[in-house]
Length: 632
Image 1 (cartoon, helix red, strand yellow):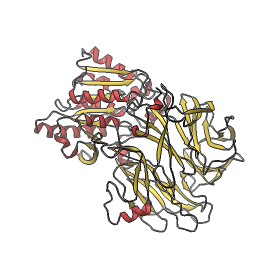
Image 2 (image 1 turned 180 degrees about the vertical axis):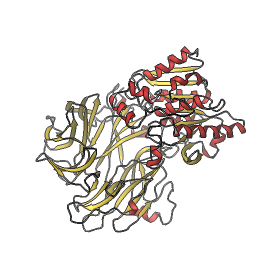
Image 3 (image 1 turned 30 degrees about the vertical axis):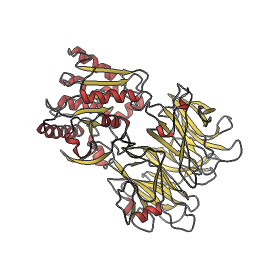
Image 4 (image 1 turned 45 degrees about the horizontal axis):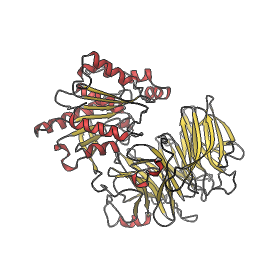
């Protein structure tokens, strides 16, 4: 039986990389079930009624990659760009019918360092050779090549070769000729306009000689645009009538330094009305929505349920559609009636679970019959101020028989108030979970995030050790065992440091996934992109304090709690050699594998092994170890 016959929309536990067709009639995403194998879903978005997802799963033994890029087409097909190193394969997937795998049509194959896809605007062209997507590729030269991709199987047509590197991508018309791109040059970002018919790029936004100016939203019908620029002195959102004589305006209500505001969609009200824009507001673990009009001078909150929104959407007469997830709600598409939500705001609290004007399609009900555990945000005292955390285990999480302190990866990352299969597996095993966003986490302002720039294992380790001491002390007073530690990638590095530095009796056991041993060791062994990121974040800079070097290998003799190390042997971010070196050092110190520690090397797995095929087995292994401490 092919995997296509057993995958259904109701079985999807994770969804990501949502994209909308230009006319809003369809959406697409990557989806995964309990086995962690990723496949493509195509969502039909009717003007009335419920949005329905349908899996475009491949034949048995084949799965999509987390790195696959998607473009949803107005007829329900999905264009997929698959990446394997510098090889890129572009195909179109079509529903193969009940119980059958998707039909795959090859469209292009390219070999170059980077390739990115952009969807065309509006409805699809009727001609067989009408473009369905734009491809932007970079090679070893400082040049970006732009191709037009068609669905007839012919080779992509070169539309332009542009000097420099380009990001972004906002359409300035509805026919797919004028595309705004963000050109990166001399350390600055400026938006230019590419005429795909002429192959010529011209400047669009240049607010200052040394400012970074990027277009983020545009309405071709009115010329209304929103941009992000640091011309006012700090990075801010502004608006203007692009091409008009009026200056760019930067409203005070759009400047919230500790929050990230992202324009999502413009109301389909048409010309002659004041623009209405829905913005997503991210702060810490959760996100919210607000409605803004240029003339109002304020942000009107929309009462959406607590959780995390997907920072992308499409607003049509059918409503605003956006991805949404909560700890007990696997990601799906929400449909919002913005006007109804504004009315509901007058009579219901902003955190209501199901406000009028809100519908979630393609997801199980909260808790899924007791299967999924809810979580909430709490604020705990830290050595330099409050630390927000996502907590599973209800009001009595601190007094649960078993508690896990979970550390996120990154370092520029954050625990979010969203569905997480690994944490859900722990909660299902009866574990309470405390997932803090210590210093260095994103979503709490620049100063908070930059606290560990050049100080990996510095302020963030201080926060973790303070939380450990507080939680372990309070649990000891209740006669309960100390918390366990769990971390992934950078969080695994931090968990090992915390285990080594915490006083005896503070950590009951430690499980880490894809750890590195120090910033310097990562810099020496990782791939060029990871080395560049490590150097940019100052990960290799030594910290001069009483704790000494932040090198796990030098601290291995202090890792005396039961330890589980899991690493994929094809990890493209943190080389598996990092974990192998730790294993060898533990053996050299006389530790016994199987009783003192367990080392698991997942064959064929990459850095995202907790989200890849076979992840459910690892989730079970981790949850069992964190509950019992038995490595065998």
